[in-house]
Amino acid sequence: MEYRVLPVGQEDLAQFKRDMQEAFQQGAAKEFALSDTEILPEKDIDESLRKPGAIAYQIVGNGPLLGGAIVVIDPETQHNHLDFLYVKYGIQSRGIGQRLWREIERLHPETIVWETCTPYFEKRNIHFYINRLGFHAVEFFNPHHKDPSIPEDMIGGDYFFRFEKQMKCTCPGE
Image 1 (cartoon, rainbow, N blue to C red):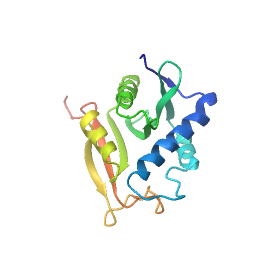
Image 2: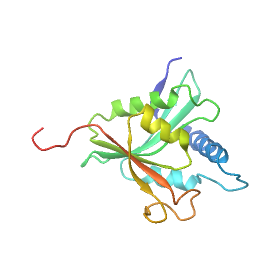
Image 3: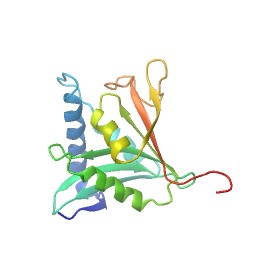
Image 4: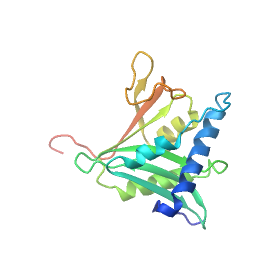
């Protein structure tokens, strides 16, 4: 199958959001007995999309949307952030997320550091970021070391890993 990574167009945005919400919901449901708790409200996705420098990407195969990501690019510092990355529920573990991320890296070669966060219970994400994409865990947020940007009511919000991936050396003289 041939994969293409494209910016998310207005016509694809509703499906992009629904698929992202379902992927996050199903991931959390495997760890917690959830009833009506919404894991990723649409307002959180919209907030990410409104950030200065935000770009939404989708990965498609021979037609359907397979996954996507929202990144935030800081053109001054080139310390860029991956806000969300998902593969459509039911088709994970086929290399789609890796292909998506590799293409995002290719599209942003000026990046010095990529950063992202994931909840402690998302073991698949931790494996994916460290073992597949080359990120490093650099901080662990917990009740004694809180990240002020994480909402108090977020499921697992007290326990998050922050990851970084160094792309370019910023060492003096190099």
